[in-house]
Length: 385
Image (cartoon, rainbow, N blue to C red; front, side, top):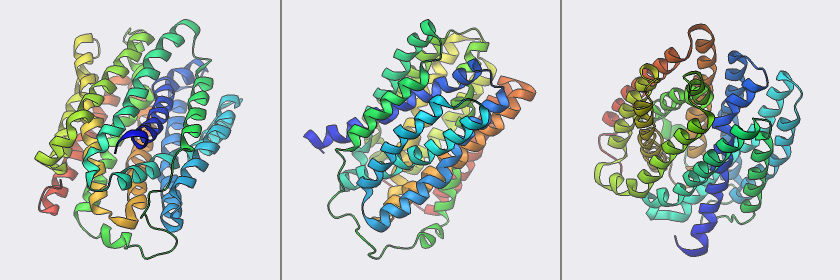
């Protein structure tokens, strides 16, 4: 993919993850500044993650059935802008929960369909996906670093309006998205999802993805708050978030070669093992800035390597007209159900036991994901490249 097409796809990832970089790292501190308790913060984060269980599958089915994936992406981007106004203006806890759920039903529908569109456009060069996706990581870095300094000077109140501006940028970029020629249209035959799920390797893969994202629930909900409790400034926290994503960018530049050399299953196992190590360091050594800094570089594995491998495996096991539903199932069970479970449990564990046990639990969940991925690789009988 070259030229205008490359930048059209890259620009979409840039705006989507720049919005995520404004929202995820700072939403916990914003909610705490609004007076919410840890249990409430955990629930509100779980609402955002939990809508990923329903939204990607609903919109994925519709996209595969109609063949109008680009229209669904544009619709989701438009309603994300409109409904986030409700988040910005919500007067209290219950209203905010409803507003977040409404917004997230559309926002969480966008990315799986765009992933499917990107992979369809790449065709046999799907291993080059990481070269496009890295612009999302660059957008995240710019957002999280720039806003960290803004919030240090002016407080957390402007946060919703920065997110809204980036969502508007995403919508305007979505107007450039077109359906890929040759993708399924209308109600033509689509292979059965049930038959795919009967392959033992597929449930094992999805279970490993669930545990990986559940282990990230505490990170997305509480990492900035956790650092502040150990004396780190908000600017320092923003830089640590950015370091993690910068490491991810570095991996995206080379992981396509590793996929061809080692296979996606082996990379998945390596990512899960390094993720368990990462959360162990965060749980036990948060007072040591050097070790926390080093642990953030492992985001290269816990997201960069993991996501590239998972996307490749999903693309392999859900062929042709199942691309949209495969991406939706991956998103809903991992980022949705896994992320929601991790966020929800971490809020209650934090309230009862404090921060370090929350990240100890995260390490345990990453180990569980490693066990599931080991089974998946054995069921597959081979690596997938």
